[in-house]
Length: 143
Image (cartoon, rainbow, N blue to C red; front, side, top):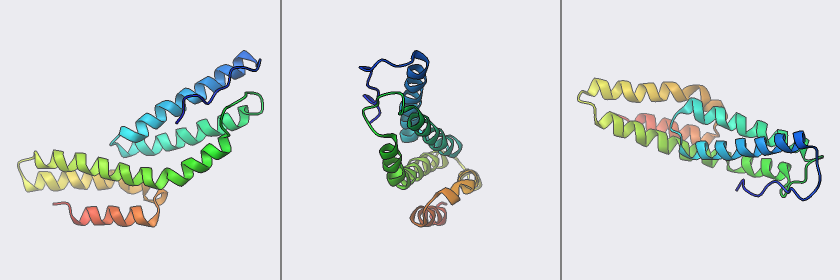
């Protein structure tokens, strides 16, 4: 998705080119993290980092020839964001479920799930209604 965004054929300021390359690197790293992390703080902070990198590319696109339009990239990201959040909830919950099943006591399992829900709670305003309902459903089905 991210590779091939930078068109180096046109002569540009080396510092501007470096800044664009850095923004692209951040987008690549953030994309990987968003697809793999199970930590709510990391996931939602990387959404912000991803937005910032797209905004940086948007500003630089006036000086740096890009193979994609940052505004279109932002629109696509916004369109897919809730699905990414849904996938994150599934991935993170499954990890917690596996860890909780390794615990010996019901109390330990309950604490494990409670910590997960406490950790993700501050991010519910970033979720659409479907994701909020899904999180409530998962809470009701844990231990």
